[in-house]
Image (cartoon, rainbow, N blue to C red; front, side, top):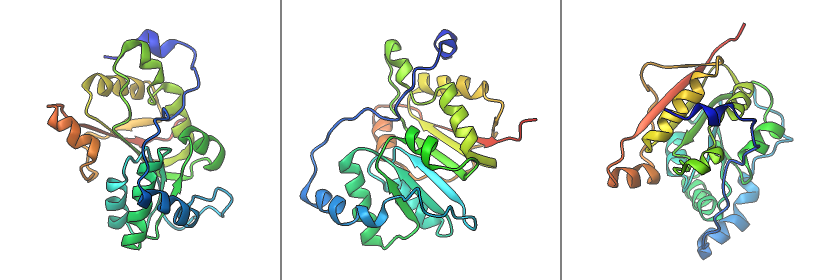
Amino acid sequence: MASVDVLEKPWRRIRSFVYRPGRLTPAQQKALDVHLPRYAFDPHAPWPLDQAMIMEIGFGNGQALVSMAQAQPDAHVIGVEVHPPGVGRLLNALADEEIHNVSVAMRDAVDVLEQEIPEHGLDEVRIYFPDPWPKKRHHKRRLIQPEFVALLASRIKEGGRLHLATDWMPYAEWMEEVMGQAPEFKREKEATHIRPDTHFQRRGERKGHSIVDMIYQRQAVV
């Protein structure tokens, strides 16, 4: 299980990512120039009250996000990702498939949650295959930390869901321990949500890693 001494230390404010610049193809750069203004998440727009609001943090190349957005046309999906090549690929897919229920926030998810999402405004948050930071000295950089989970709890409405997935068993154990300390969330006995395969999942499976999905429901806390 996760080392509790790490969890008990004062929270060092984390970022939801580590910036690793990648090479942009001409098509990806064009997507950022042409399509990002169209799909950019606008925090100043009126918050929709008549449709489910879903956030995926760290969508990678966007394959899973596109598939799930198409499967839920009545929901709106906010994709949060900072790496330009992945954002470019997603934007091209959204434009090619004429998908209109997705917006993109190309900035740190912690900032987006703190500053741009209303309290209890989200029906679901999805975090698939975040960086596991396997070395012990790097565990403090892991996204799933008690304070971050508390932030998520403040943004997910009662009855909403938090869906976590990882292919790194020590991180799965860490997640389970952190979530076990959060009274706002109760784990569902079965991962009933359908989630398409992702690039990171397939890479983990090629390495022989087991895939763990954990779904938690936001509880009312008295």
